[in-house]
Image (cartoon, rainbow, N blue to C red; front, side, top):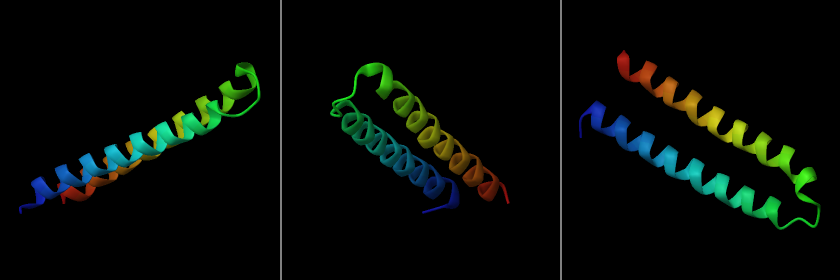
Length: 67
């Protein structure tokens, strides 16, 4: 398998893991007994954190793949 193809599959795997983790965390937050207004900051925070890390890993893989 060449380098571009392996990077593509790593990105796909990272995307799948990030989506699964995000859905799990959002589900766990929604099961809390707190009202929605108290849950909203946790939902926004985890969304920004997970997808920020995913974006950073994608950029890192692009940088690594360019060398």
